[in-house]
Image 1: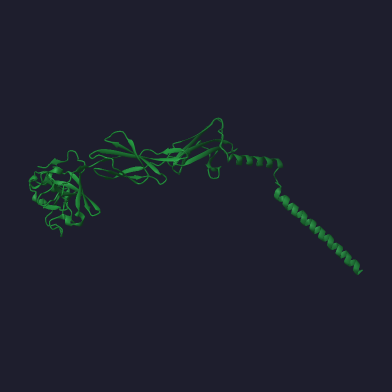
Image 2: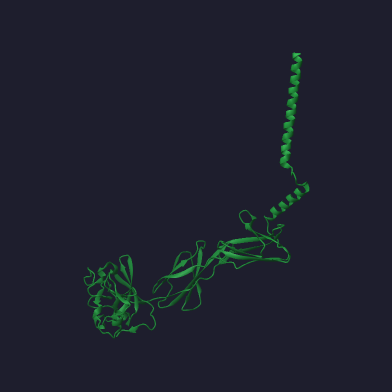
Length: 393
């Protein structure tokens, strides 16, 4: 009996093992089927849905053929905005707006709307954009439109004006590599002067006492396509008048006179030196008007009281520019035959100062002070202001 019982138990164990193996196999099959089968969805509808998804995906990777009776436009394009508007001759309740991704080469959802227009903002300048409109219900492509945002306008300003040059400061966005500079002479026609690729430009092809007008615009070239900005505001510069300097005279000596010595109240000299606009510079003791030092020059350089000059000094390698205003004239009897400098001290310019405020170390010449040290290398006259100046008496 013992052997019979063992046999029965062994056979029973094998049967149980087989049953377990079958259960595990069936269970694995059920799991696999559960993953693949569309429970609750009819086979026909799933196939239709898959086909529809495939169609939409394909549509997202190709241009949209404009649907008949649907018109899409992009206008009011600026450097960072544009307006999309569209019309349809059939009723469409909702639109899906997509933007084309040039990197992934597909349409990406932008937004849904029931309106027939869309104001785009926050765009990048000088950038290509492509937008498409779809029927939000069916994802049928209706039309697409492409546009390029404008280039931001550059600006031009005067940096320095002389008798022989006009230096300009030009500002533009970093994305712009070139700026076209235009110039007009004495109100004439604007002509292209140069292509600028820096923040400054110096126009040396100028004549003295001439009015020049400047304006700029930005130009970019991408894929054989040119994008041009609007023209900037115009700036105007009148070059200064240049004077000949006396031969053999450096102008390093710069003498001075007390302004109270001018006592004739009816003269333009007295009126300027004692006007409300005239004051004493506390550092140097020199009388000044609106930042211009009051000086006397020989008649060679002019006789109108109130005429303004720029006097350029060279002190070694350092260049200094002094803004000066004519408050008196050196007597002709005291100057050379051309009346360019005083014969006695060989000085070209003479400061008018307030007595008692003479700085230390002058020793007869303001050229001993660091800010006035150097030879006179250029004397230029600023453009005259009409009806505000009188000739010296």
